[in-house]
Image (cartoon, rainbow, N blue to C red; front, side, top):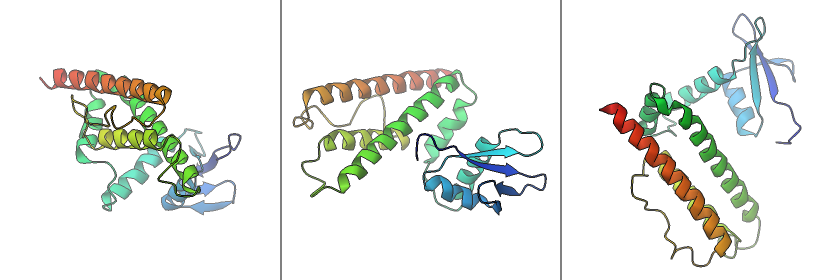
Length: 191
């Protein structure tokens, strides 16, 4: 998506129908999900009150996909999200999730850029770092991250430049520290 491109404005009428202001037609939740998958940001507002309903509709889209068996979020992650609404950790969870998804998007876009090059699995600058970030993200999202770290060791990264290795290690250490703090807070609240 271009930096200067405005979000697609969807207006919700009193009848609960959703109206695409760019194409002047009605859309469904599945249409909105398609816009988002296509890289478009959306903003959904109530026509009468002007209230921003985007979060509510995005959660509804996720709930519908999950209820159809298109599970992305493991049960333990959903449990932790529910717990976070009732704990003091609430302030840390949104930042952690946003940072995790930002890291995932960056890694994914770098990987896709390099896919167009000849023999993408070998000789791609930073491929090991991207792979390590994706593995760390997947472990975090699936509950695989515990108090001990089982990610790539420094020996696995021997081919990566020292500066990239240091930055990545620092980032991973910061994430591990945040996760450990969250786990401590959650365990104290469970007692």
